[in-house]
Image (tube, rainbow, N blue to C red; front, side, top):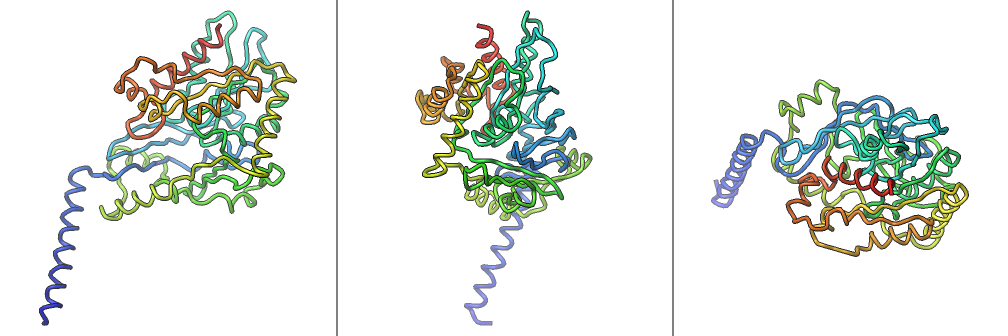
Length: 369
């Protein structure tokens, strides 16, 4: 055998052996993924496409967990009320004249499937013994923003019996075009329309499907039945991938993460402005008490940013729709970095239950004044 070929075979054998040893060491070290995060679900029955809201949550309960660096970072559940939203059951009409009713529009921070309760539910609990309890009708849905809020308001909530409305605005919510999701056949589809014109919104799942790629493009997920979900959560199951595969998928998911929207231009911006004008008209016509409450990110708080572009956008939005503006960053004034981090998950960007409850207390304090 020629020396060049012999040396090449030695290199290949040594590399293969190194990968096998590395894989074995990785499995002994963690037993699960050590390169990042993946999500597990107990069914595909809860998240369904909807032409008005983008998607709705059925009353079926789907357990959800995020596994980060081999540890369950959170365990929560997806489930909806009688209208398909993450709220206690509600009707368009008021059943008790004592109760004040506020519609809530937000994103994943307000849908809050990550813990035992979301902030609107806890805020409602805090007011139960008040002379005038407050009912929070939570229309918030994960990854949604202005386009979805507008569609729900105009097509569904326009004639609800309400006293006020709260927009819990985070990050680029105001730049998000119509967002859709759908779970079926062990697939989690998620996508945003590439245009703002609501006359072109898909009315059926078949029409929406071209805009709903498999979410695996953006994040690693696995859908089980409940017994196997619990097995995966306990660590009895883990992704059957080699260490190198996991590293590749981790890098790929970072390169192809769910695309962040940018400020639209041209005709898209015209439609965005018309949506805000429609919301302003809805508020004014019904004389609603309107509040825009800005939710800061963990990174923004740790960087001590006092005037981010997102916050300025939220302030401008409040002016356009005739709402009062409140800065949720004020909740963290005086906190050191460790105290701030204690209100958020360690890897996931969302706040944890402590952060959600803190925000609920803040909102109730605002509305009691």
